[in-house]
Image (cartoon, rainbow, N blue to C red; front, side, top):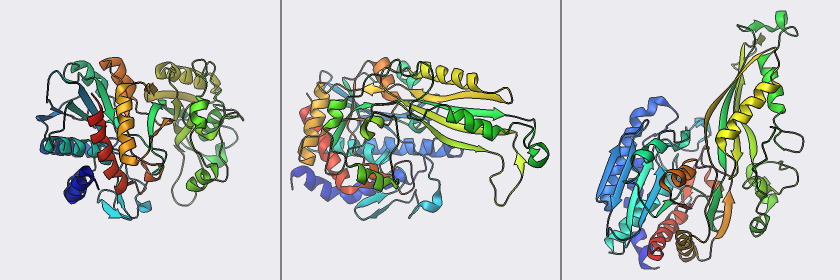
Length: 449
């Protein structure tokens, strides 16, 4: 056991107390009733950053939820690392599927179980505890700034304006983010790219009120039926998106890089409980979920969904849908193309409204970046082997915004696993990976000069 590992072992119980104090705050940005919880969580983060050794930690206003900014300046002439994270979490529903209370963290089977255990309170806590170790041992050679926001799970609508307003405050040489995942507990990896995102709500309106399906069925278009037909036309039988011009700026998948990644399709299917995978024809599963765009219905509703039956022809139907995009696809352009296409295929029997919700650009991090190589070194020391470079299918829209507004590249040094069930019931985070994550970040700081 080395000195870092000894320190973690000696201080782990206090670390868990501090982390759990964050997790117990239900900072759900999507639900307005948690407005006060957002402020409480931001204030708790500021307190913990000060305790870790930050020179200052401020809870600053934005157009939406407050933003936490903190910094530790050791030498004005040294390089500066800006750590980004988010303190908001996804709603916990369906609650009945949790084995323990989502906002009352528990340690079971070597894991922390709670909403936010991984995404992103657990992962961002790794960064803060690494700073604390470096300061306690006089090892910090770079300046470190922190920006923690409370709106990542709803698309970071306020952060771009905050960055524009506070460019000097956020000035740095590189941005470090722990909000991504690895290939496996025994197969560490660094994320070199993320997909972008475009998200919409579709509203279909038929008659001016709900109608009796016996009196009107077959004579009036049913908005739910129409909505389903519209959605069915967005992709073809080969899994390709049918929007004209959609693939014009899509590069070829990075097949050489992906071919190096060990992948057991049988285990993949077993883990998620499906008999077969499906996606765009001509591409592998790993290509489909990382380097190719996709379309999904995220929610659909309308009519009567209560207990028993009600023979109703509904007035309205709704769906929330999204596209994962790849770098070079502009989410603003795709958003307009999508809306135009939906309206072009909508029949005159209904009225259709398409409302853009949020979106973001894709991102690629060069593996030649010195900060990437420092992260690679940190992983190699902590996990015992050089991490693989991988593209991931998720989106963190603000990462591309950082590059556009602040002019700084981001290194995605994440420690999550697919089995952590982020955004789902029974979210969890491995204690072993939590410990190794702290060690990896410490070694990143030691290597980055």
